[in-house]
Length: 354
Image (tube, rainbow, N blue to C red; front, top):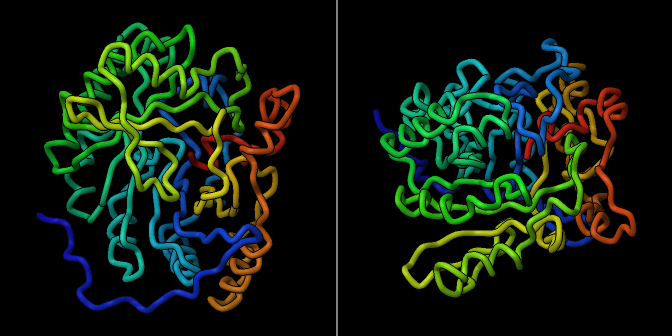
């Protein structure tokens, strides 16, 4: 089977809504589950969590309806996240629903790849546009230490399966942490190059769930670029970043890689993304403490017009510059403590999606 053919007719133009800083909403990150099959220290350092009630998790029909409302105010790209999104049963069916939407030009996925070997072909056939894989180590022992699972083999097999299914280039996201996996910088870059993938180094972020975050563990963009240059030659910046989170560079041999410097060099001014939790709460910023409960409105009979008005009002009122505000803190500590996260699990990174 092949991915569905994109619509040939021109979709109706959405009435783009700008926030208080003039930013449009184009990119919606949708968490389809708060569950994960790894326990990465920078996201889920504990073994047990307060999970969302299954009865509150949005159905595919509800997600599709909310996405349609979001496209009315400018969203044209969605990314399915988690937790680990491939834990959601029959995810390819949601992909197929969204891929048929006339206003969406991209349906993407972020995954840890453990379940990609089984699911990559059906995701491709359903119309999934792109895959990003979170992979922080190529060493089996270190992978286990970072994720508390012996699953490196399955992750690498999943990346290979996605390549065979026709996803190219696959983006590889690596959170570099000083004294943890930063010595693998070159090995990870070589791995991405050899597979035709694009590696993106991510600074360790003090988001919800990162209860053990410390500035001492952050490997910043300047250090990453210096270490890449020492072995591979001077990276040359690529133009045209726009609202994308990564600064992209090319090496003398043509290798392209990126750096997402959200911690030390935030890009709030160009941010065009928002997040929808698995239970239907809308967050306009990754660092926001409060969201808006769309699921309750949906389940209590809100019309499409009423949902649309809620979205317009929320985005117009948005003034978030969360990462920049965090950068300005004199004594920067984790966004939320364990007690606060237990009281409000929607603060968790794995609940609202990356």
